[in-house]
Image 1 (tube, rainbow, N blue to C red):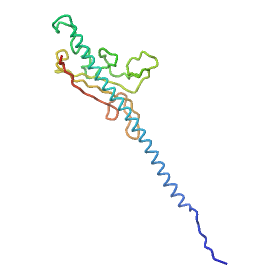
Image 2 (image 1 turned 60 degrees about the vertical axis):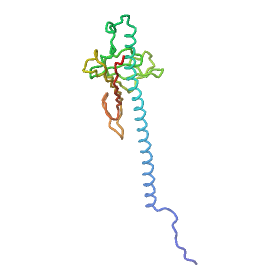
Image 3 (image 1 turned 90 degrees about the vertical axis):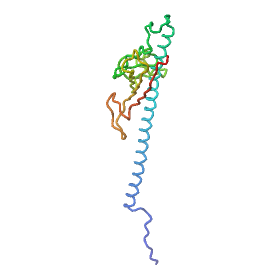
Image 4 (image 1 turned 45 degrees about the horizontal axis):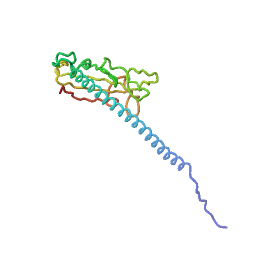
Length: 198
């Protein structure tokens, strides 16, 4: 009779525990990476939308200024100072540091900066939605105008600052922010100087 040695071809308990531990670390790491990518993608989408809303705020101010020039240009009196229109008409309300609001349908600015923008059924952001299907968004826009020597009526230029902030929940990347608070992770600020070259 031959002596046969018992050969164990299976896993021992220790090997099995180590294998499960290594696999668990890999799976947990993969899920953590996916959740991090999801959070970063969400933050990037919010930041991109806020950037477009800030640019739109700047365009609204530029549009109001240009419309004021058209009103001055069509004034029947040859002296532009005789007309009641100034190139800063409708914009001087934003001179306070608290800022003001305007949307794409505005012909002048209106006070306040604490309202959320609504997204209407045509894809436009507005403050007072006429359509009941409009949905409140997480974005707020504040427009501040700083006039030369704090005198908007006689200014030759003014600085426009648009600030768009959004609600942000706490995540593994950043802490949540208070409603309306502007931090580096939930705020986009644009600045531009507009001149009275008319």
